[in-house]
View (cartoon, protein in one colour):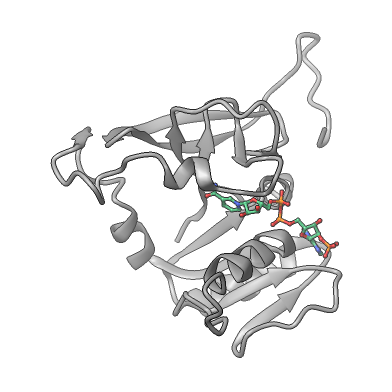
Amino acid sequence: MTTIYCTATSLDGFIADDDESLSWLFATPSHDRDPQGRHGDGDSLDFDQFIAGVGALVMGANTLEWLRRELTRDGAEFVWPYPQPSWVVTHRDVDLPPGVQRAEGDVRDLHAEMVEAAGGKDLWIMGGGDLAGQFFDAGLLDRVWVHLAPVVLGAGKPLLPRRIRLHRQAIERDGQLTAMLFDVVGAEARDDGSVRAPI
Ligand SMILES: NC(=O)c1ccc[n+]([C@@H]2O[C@H](COP(=O)([O-])OP(=O)(O)OC[C@H]3O[C@@H](n4cnc5c(N)ncnc54)[C@H](OP(=O)(O)O)[C@@H]3O)[C@@H](O)[C@H]2O)c1
């Protein structure tokens, strides 16, 4: 069982632009449109394989609202798209789809609940970046998996607003995306050797 922050990011480290849109990601050709476009260490970074190994997932309140907007664009009813046990962290009084659980505060209790629900499978931290950072702060983030899109946004929602040293495990080309899987090594020290708590 590993706890993985898996997300797509712009080259300058944003997971959503300053309009909270992912149009830049959906405009990036991936293997969905070009099945021959996958090259690299292997096919270990296939998202379909990843999701099959996920036993529980969590997202922040803004990601939930993005998902709700995205899936109801054509007037459709909001139906939760993930079969896995799912949590949303928020302080808001949000309307959650049936079966989706609410959590708030320290992520350590939530992590324990997710581990139990996942039945030995992986935990997916969907984002945003600070939520992944909270798991890191608690020593509970094992891996970071990014799909890097060749676009620079200049502003938006940050990928992972912490100082963290990673170790690259795998890299693959997926159309115009570059998929990279990293192990979390630990807090990245500053020039004076100090390691300070979250920025
Ligand atoms: N590129 C990708 O693949 C990808 C992946 C995921 C998300 N996104 C995008 O990123 C954007 C959202 O990112 P975001 O940085 O705004 O983060 P987010 O994690 O979706 O939402 C942040 C909010 O979640 C709540 N929250 C976070 N931690 C909490 C905790 N421990 N306890 C209680 N509430 C907590 C807080 O809201 P309250 O206190 O107000 O409840 C916080 O302001 C969306 O546009 C989404 O589409 C992109």
